Image 1 (cartoon, rainbow, N blue to C red):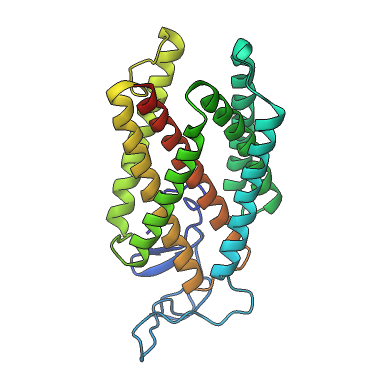
Image 2: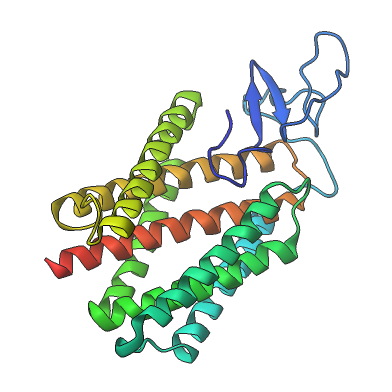
Length: 285
């Protein structure tokens, strides 16, 4: 199973054909007839007392605490730069294009940092934090604009909605109400690709034809696609949780907790943006 989250798409903790595939690299065979993974001789060895997989003993293995602390640092960077940009770059209704230009520029820089990290062999904390900083600038300017034009409570509602989605998916995952398997990942990946292609087409139509393009981001269709976007974000969260769980269980290196934080941050940004857009449409209607 491999996550469709951009962070894990190349190096996710995978189980393909009964063998642990590691980070997308070919692992040497340890012994004939023995399943291998980068961190243990047999990733499916079970504890006779519990029947659960045995985590290999490693002095430098990733833990939940590592993931939590890295995620807190990355999200904290997003929140801090968003707050600073909100205050330092106030939206001027008379020159709104300037604010949108700053937001788009910051988003493009954040995208470049994200892509560079995605193709790195190992996580680079500086790149991840740089991504978080510019993503925060983008979110701060966009949130300020929404607060100005839609209403000051919109951003708070979007933040609360994002937190509720995170908590709901975490509870559902821990209770095993959500099963992340190959079929789940395949369906979510296909749906996400289709969703993003539609949004790109809608954007192109809006640029060249004006208005809201094909209407996928306004009115009834906008509400529908906003809900779909949030559901996809929730599915990405479930896959992120699965990647973290597998990494901890099978003893991924501690540095991989930065990738987990990176993936969780991108997913939460996705959910927040979809939530912000949905609430804006509902208030506008």
